[in-house]
Image 1: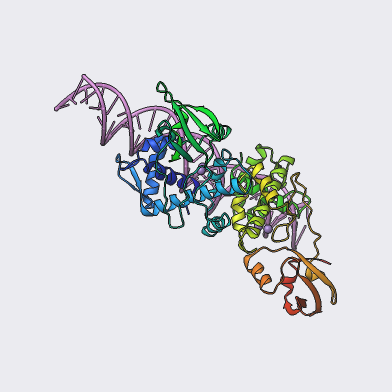
Image 2: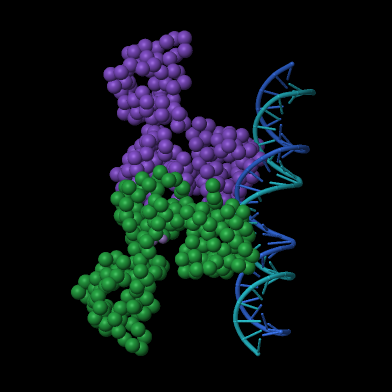
Length: 217
Length: 217
DNA sequence: TTTAATTTTTAGATAAGTCTAAAAATAAGA
DNA sequence: TCTTATTTTTAGACTTATCTAAAAATTAAA
Ligand SMILES: [Mn+2]
Ligand SMILES: [Mn+2]
Ligand SMILES: [Mn+2]
Ligand SMILES: [Mn+2]
């Protein structure tokens, strides 16, 4: 059995791996987990001893098959619990992440599978992130954001790239929730802010905000 | 915030307190938690520093108001999660305890309250144990067991005093589940075993088994 | 290709929770 | 009451995960 800490390291490495082809750097893991590089080095050695990561000094780290399996199953847990909290316990999408950070570490295949069934096998979590299936396959969205659309184009909100409470609350306040249909009315060249239509209402949105909203055309 | 370990000590002391009027002994806590007396002494000192227990060397330990509040809220969590697992995720009553041991430590008042509401405010967990209310009141069953009944008397199963998997599985195999109606056909004086009727079937049950089954006449 | 900046690793310390073995206090028995 | 037996506490050691400060390796710049 792994400690919560070890599991969180695996999850962090998994997350960072998706953005990097080669090994994940010590510093990036430290930043992701709000810890120090020296702590990361120590933990990497331990995970390496347990054959959960491949590691060569100064060369970065990557997950082994086994390590990736564990990481994905934790992500699966995390996202299923988020769905549960929103769908069944009436939480808002900006309230569920921290609780899911704890719940994800409860390791029971039966629990996960029964929860999955109870939720009727959801494909996405409340933030639009894909839920890995039982075999560990994850089908990510294409990385197309609102900021990529041109004047006159339409799109549907399918996810967010930024998960902070404040961003999520802001989006909800202007009805930019999952499934919302958007039309680009205008783009201000100076700062790339946009005027868009959602729900027959017109709102303005900064580039900072639009580039974190994942869209399907 | 408390660690899981600290919470488990509080819970253990709470459990043992209900069977003792004066302070709980170091050894009994050690046994309850499968640890050593020396470890218990160390932890008690820590909990005492945090004003969660009252402690005088060699005189046993008892919970403060604050300590008891925490302990009860953990018990509340534990039992609500057990209800969830059985009612919503189709677990059997012998499968839920260990998972609840983990889930109970997820501290969120909102989560607990929403879960309580989702489950429609259950009064008892799957083993018949009472679920403390939001204010920390617990209404325990009277301690009347099947073994206390006389020949010819009837009773209804309302709980168990022993929570081992094997006992729970055994009970289920002979239909001695919560709510089952029992009639005592005969008592063997030699070993206090009983012949009883459940669901129109007759079964024999040892004293060891009957004295752990809580009954309401 | 040296030198300088950055990144990563090591060395040594600290805190939590545990253990064994031994000492101290309490309880039980003669 | 005095002597054992039992219980509880203390002393000292170990493990895990963390940190700071310093050394080593790599990368970037001149
Ligand atoms: Mn999340
Ligand atoms: Mn999410
Ligand atoms: Mn239980
Ligand atoms: Mn129970």
